[in-house]
Length: 338
Image (cartoon, rainbow, N blue to C red):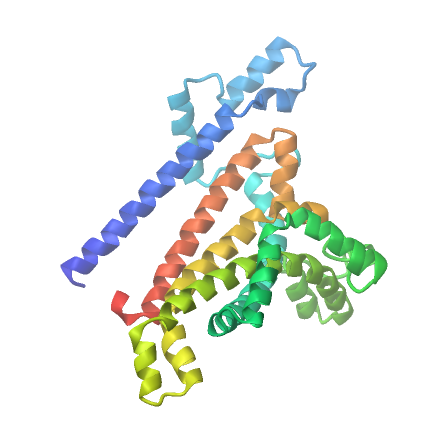
């Protein structure tokens, strides 16, 4: 490994460490500056002073802030994120239990968003200022502007209550709960492993609507960005040169113009996926989806700071991981970055 390569790896590692430290400082400040007394959240408003001070001492909130921060960092390094007040279980166990539901929802949504958004963005760019372009831009503007909780409620009314085409709230119908062993936490995968296709169909029926609404929101963003990137490439001289030399329009678009925006699209799709993972709070609330978003919402309402701080930290780590994944994919799609 060359010295330049070693220096680049060391610099990236240093950047990650600084980012994580900043993230720890941010989550610690959130936990201490929010107008919530973690001791009162545990002992209740009627507890006497002696009980309050005993719990405060056990939590360490009576110590100086710098001492509390050092203890907090030490706990995080050891993988100790505390116990949730609401469930009485380790926070990390709670998150491991609810996270598959959100990953399943967000993954289905990003597949819809990218699967439709990228082709639509390219089609709009090719047909710039034509009726097809105007229609696509109008649809993406609606998807980007409408509040997602409103879209979710309208979707439930139309497609569930009126038409009965999809399942209602939750991941699965009540009478199917417990029929499939929780092997991975992903309902579709667990049902497939168990070979229970009736449960699989019901879980998919419940997933379609919330994932489609989330996917529509991300599709609007991905379509607009893809269109912008493609317009920039179609205006370059190499496209004109390729057409003059007799290269077909489709080959010019897909093998040349699209090849030059793949790296940019990797970043857009990765960030959109991260936003879906941490931003599914409203859609999970509307659809009673027992995932990460609903978990952090419920714990914020009761002032469970261990859970809230861990969730905020996890969101930051997810975005760091997605950025690292994007960097790795850059090297695959663009040899110049190697």
